[in-house]
Image 1 (cartoon, rainbow, N blue to C red):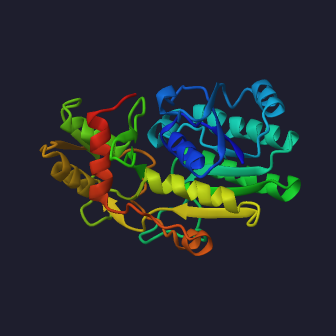
Image 2 (image 1 turned 180 degrees about the vertical axis):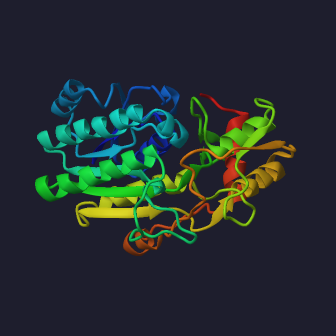
Image 3 (image 1 turned 90 degrees about the horizontal axis):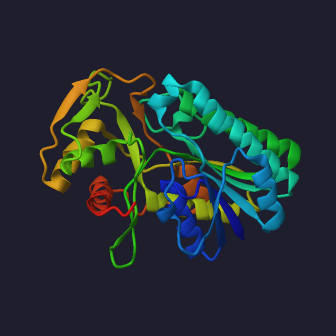
Length: 327
């Protein structure tokens, strides 16, 4: 297939583009580089600079390229920022996604893999499965849920075939067969726990902030499910290749194992050999106490399972990247 990877210069999008290519597919990356990095795009992919909210550009793209499917990663993802500036997130994530969906169906492209999030769920003290109640605790999660609902209607009314993949915490770095780092996590601004923690070890910030230690968790800090970028990318390949047979799929992607903020920092100390001093500060709005995935459904349906579930291995690969980033 010829796959259009929207947001394919970002962390997850670029890794997935590389996996699509390795699986024998042709890839075109479409990205405005507001949050992405041109250097992260696989060299075998065609790159087109453009914005997903630009309907005229999308029309030209679909008219001139023989696109079979779209993988949609283009979104703002910072939960805290979404609570401070909700309009920015509703416009970029929801409005622009509707423009993309309309362009797709207009030009007869009816295969979609959508990058969603575990933030669409209500919090729960055990592993979340796809049948659990939805109830985003922040605007970011709400925007992803709104896009999911649009996708469902484009499926039922216009025949769009889709796979919605709800990620838990993407992390780690992508290595080649010789162990060299190919691409890693680099956001501007950086808001994710593992890279922020490693920045302390690198001397790029003095201390690590822990946003609240009074949550109803074993050590009082938030608990999350961390999934390696390679495992996320491989799931996209499986889902896209199954979309003709299974025309409407929604799957969780996670390890089923939760780690607290404090546990992540402790493992980072082991990996880096740095003390990584911390300060406990006030909670952030919109942070759920616990988010852990049950990925049994995608394991049963598509045979997917994580190959890199170890938190130590995840942080070690991220540490390799952050010591020698190339973008």
